[in-house]
Length: 458
Ligand code: TYD
Ligand code: MG
Image 1 (spheres, helix red, strand yellow):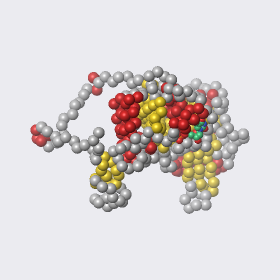
Image 2: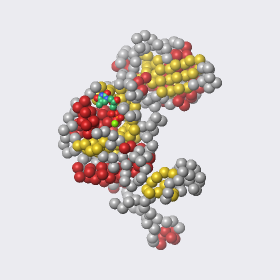
Image 3: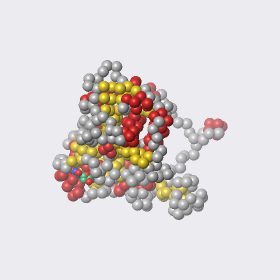
Image 4: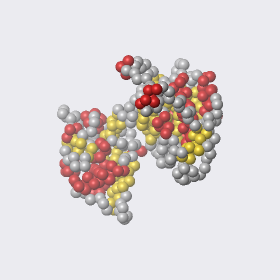
């Protein structure tokens, strides 16, 4: 391959240079030049039409969508049903999946388990490319996981051209790159892990996957700020993005799809880290409850719905007198702006003052709740902590709180209530529209229309 020309593009003004410098010579911004490769120049337009109409460019082909025949996508099972679930029922051939997460959370473990299982399926011939560990280390991990890796091919290599070349010969149908931050391309001079390196290597791998219909897993490390190290751009280039959630000190690991061209997003896969690697948890609905011995204030159970499953989670709040001019509003596992909004609603429509209080809200177990159905639970947890009054342990709540102080219904209300009843909850406070038409055995449902009704019901 002819060596591509390296150019440096200013991220501020878009000017390009042949040499790197600390300051852009055009807009004088500092440290804004990024290494890249020169794109081929588009062919010059020909024909009279464009000249007459004043537009440049040649005509493109338009097709009738009804006449396009798409092949039914074939899916490969990874052998791990929780992973298949987040992928949307298995791996689509030719797709590129990015798995992100903090170092040490279990990315390599999960992929080794999946590859071991896939190596036992016929014709998949998976290839594990590692740029981080030696064959001995991988072998030791496989022993520890107690998986059969006799048929699994391993390649320790970090140059993307060599990886692709080798893969062309070995013809795997599934390829794992662990991790993309260690891979570099010969075209660029910057060090592995630099944004340009990661982006260009990924681009080459994506092209390779599409051309040869090979499924590729890319492992990406996440920085402290929670973004995939350097390149958020990677998320746009791949078909599916999965993130490991949960803190590494807890036993549970949650994988969430945040982008999926072939399935639902926000689907969760739940695992527990054990001595023998990651164990699937097929019925995770109640694992995140802390089950206090006695009633405590500031804790409320809600039923959320992540992907296609209801999940019982515990919302904890701590409200404490503040000594700061700007009292703190801290959330873990929830949107912080939403908390400020809810506190304003609580003040206006519930007459509860918190402007002299620090408010901390946490979702137990390191899960993230992104739906607005958590609003009511957050408010009741805050109120319970503020007044130091425990909320009954057999009560669940869910519902969105509007700015006018109304309680709005959530989707799949009946399913959530049934899940709560199944786990022995006796009472539920929900929006009126979520109250079931036929009573649920053992569960008393208290329908509310406005926030004051909910406060009164307590
Ligand atoms: P790893 O898969 O190496 O993390 P990543 O690739 O995301 O950086 O996970 C390593 C962690 O998992 C390590 O802290 C030890 C733990 N672990 C177990 O608890 N049990 C096991 O069987 C294995 C293989 C790892
Ligand atoms: Mg690893």
